[in-house]
Length: 466
Image (tube, rainbow, N blue to C red):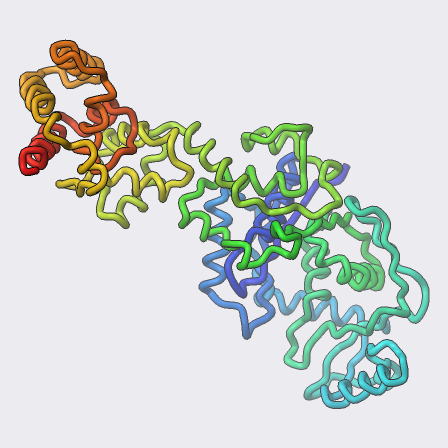
């Protein structure tokens, strides 16, 4: 078997979106599964729309997803001499020709063709004029007038295209820049691409590319067109379905492994398994298991996966990825060990890093803001004595561990004939300002003796002021 070489060729006209990320992932997994190579190529021949900011955004997204590449990134704008070399081969062999038809002339003839009931394609007027290079002239590829071009797709099966229905496409614009269908063939030829795995929005480009391969006398790569991703309303995924940019999910507090796991399941399966490690994905991924039907993007399923990965990660590994979110909230001035302990208390309770950072504010603020409804309900006069006893007992504690705190609480409850529920919620309100929090003792252990005493005393002040 020849070496497997795949590629991902984004256009730098915007961010890396979900659909592109899945295409990159499938190419990466296929190459890694076969011990092959994965190439990153930036298709920047649309000079007017390509930007450095978009290139950086794409590279950042690839790195965040840990889709490492073996070669590249290659830039098409740095390969113009290579395209001209292959263009000359097509011109010399008669498979391409110069055309000086103006846009106005082309539009007029298209309208005439449509009015006459004909297909509005280029009519081949310059095919046999033997024009040379000149101002405002483009180069067109000569598509055969008859015959059938067959795309043997690894996912969709054979697809047939009648050559008579295809246009003599422009392969070099008048400014000397190659067009997509020509440049991509030359790139894939010179980079020895063995498998072209891409979205099925490229199916209609493929017969034109096949014909260019054949005109150059070069063997075809294997093609696999992946069904598109749809929104829950079964229309093509777009911004109205939520965020589509990969880095937007990073900013919303998603982990890359959750997004990877979710994307791979949009169109691929391995039995009924839902959760995959990266090594399992590399081991199991086969094109034969890619479905023919579109994947439907379900934000709730992605959120569930993210919660799973947050819960399963070690708290220590979450510290560096959580810090930027804490920084944004002015809440990161604590050592790693403290943050790891704090993270542990919220891991089973949150879905995103944003949720976690918001929830962890309780560990950083100097003074908690009491929720009026919660304080009014739980910080009542009847709690004055339990709070006084609790403060006195904690002040005398030398060992401020969870087990010791439980013992202190139990002693006070026994002495006063109270049940835990009677005192737990008032203490929670005093410590956090609200009625929802991690386990009381684990939270107090993270806060530390000084903070706990300060907040209990403030709670007692509130009780006495009523």
